[in-house]
Structure formats: structure tokens, C-alpha cells
Length: 408
Image 1 (cartoon, rainbow, N blue to C red):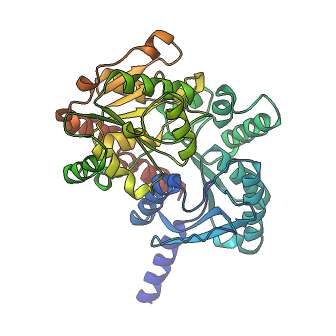
Image 2 (cartoon, one colour):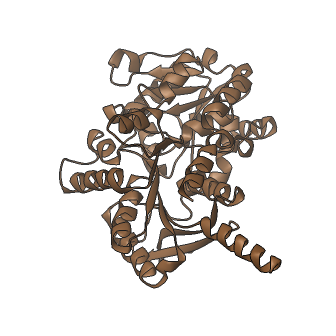
């Protein structure tokens, strides 16, 4: 009888842990999946906050990709005939709705809750929640529709209105919303929401440390660069929510004004970046443009002296949390960031760990900063320590403990 009683207690305890169906808007090999989703999955399993996770991602039938595995996580690819699954569009929403919906029709009883990363995937979770009567939560919840409208990527048309409606539905019906900015959390709470928490886009700082030997190795492979040179780095895309011509104009002025300055660009938009430098008369010996897997980004950050975060300045951008900012902080890079971005701009300005530039002000945008003062290598440890309080997952992910214990 005692053994049976113990088995019953264990069964009850296990049943209380959530079985999540996690919906991603990005493919399994997307850098954002590796940078933002995998760390969360590992943490939830490691801390025993959930019993199991099924991760679903949109995938192309034409691409040979695989999931190398996280204990306790099952991968459910949703296939589409589209070749470029990382090209955003409503096809992703339709693909996920159809694929995940089909899966839930046969396997609904395997799950206790739907969980989504980002407001667009959150819209998918919201619709599926209504159809299948499953609760849902959304992390990295942001006003995506406003980002796209204000940046000029979308017009005030059907696409904007549909996404805006989906965000409103999530605000109304989600069991939990986790934003990436304290300012957005406060805004939502001021509008009557109580089920809101904040986790900025975070990473384990121990997994992306500054490495002096790799720094020397990479810098020695760059043309002309020695210890007297300043190396800047940008990781990401151009256009939409990021500045494009304005950013390349800014970098062009830095390169023309300092003959010992070198620029690294890590981006999938290789041809676009190359043409931008050529248009501004920049010699190929003054820059490196590469597309690298997420696992190699830290090495190039170690080789750099300054990181750039050129988010397009609009009203809603104070509610976002660029992944790249956390990665720059992890290796101790001073950051040049645009004005009023997330909580980042204020952190950088108040703690003097970089420079905030108003890209909407022509005088500020065309001013040449003192790169050697900004890039002082002796400040790396200070920046890392400060950044850890703000963007290290070991600090921020504790919010998940609070969230999931409340849910169960």
C-alpha cells in the first residue's frame, strides 16, 4: 500500500508539470532560433518547470536540416514547398496554422498548453487555442504590427490590421504574456493587464565569453589590421526595422575619417552589404562581410572593439530588445546604439558604456565619434559585469520559475 501511495503521489506531481507545444515562427536552423529559443527550452527542462516540450517550426521541403537534440524536447517540423522559410510573410502563419492544427486534431491530449515566441507566432497560438480549447502563453511579446508600420515595411492595410487584431486577442486571452522591455510591461499593466512579466532577449554569458586568443587569431587574418586598429562589428540585417542607407553612410564616414578603422559585417545579406560599401567608395581591404552560423558569432565579437545596433527610431522601438545587444554585452563591447531603443539606450548612456546616436538628427548622425575613447579594451570587464545584470539568462530566466509554478 505504501508503494502504491508513493506511485500515486509521483503521478500527481508529474501531471502538474506542463506538456508544452512550443510554436516558433523561425526555422530550426535560423540564428534567432538558436539564440533565443534553444536557451529557453534547455532552461525549462533543466529546472523541471515543464514535463516535456514539442517544438514546432516551419521548414522547407527543399532544405536538408536537422535538430541535434535537447533532452526532453521533440521536434515537429511543419513542411512547406517554399524554398526560403526565413522570408517573412503570411505564408508562415498559414503553414503553421494548417500543420500544427492537423497535429492537434490527432494529438491534442498530449498537451496542456500552447507556447509561442513572438507576437506573430502568438497570433497562431491564439487562433489554435480558440479552436482546440487549450490555454496559451506568449513570450517575447511585442507590438510587432507597430514596428512594421512605423518603419515603413508595412502600410496601414490588411496585413497591419490582421496582425494588430491578433496582438489584441493575445492581450485579452493569453494566460501569460512575457515582454522583452520593462517599458512595454508597464504600458500593458497601465491598460489593465495583470498577467505580464518581462524577460529581455537573454543569453548565457558563459557561452559567449571574450576570448583573447581567438581575438588575435581573427584580427591577424584581417588585411592590415594590427593592435593599433579599431574594429567595429555589426550582426544582423538591413532595412525594415533597421536602418540601411543611413547606417552605411555612418560607417562610411567612420572609414573615411580614420585610416586605421576596419568594419566587420555578419549578415545573410552579403551582396547587399558589398554593394553598399562599393557605392560609398570603400576599399575591400577595409571591411569583412560574412554569413556565419550562430555558434561562430562570439569569436568575431571578441575580435571587435565596438558593436553597432542601428535600430530604426520610431515610437514603439522602446518596447523591443535586440538580441545583438546582449551578445555585444556578453563579450564586453561598447555599443553605438540609436536613440530610444528598448531599455538599451538608457542603460548605455547612463553607464557610459557606448554612445547613443540620434539618427533622425542630421547633425548627430554625421558627427564623428572618438572611436579610440569608446573602444578602450580595459572597460570590457566592467561592461560584461553590468551587462550580466541586464541580459544574462542566469539572472533573467528566474522569471520562468515564477511563471510556470503559478501555472501549475
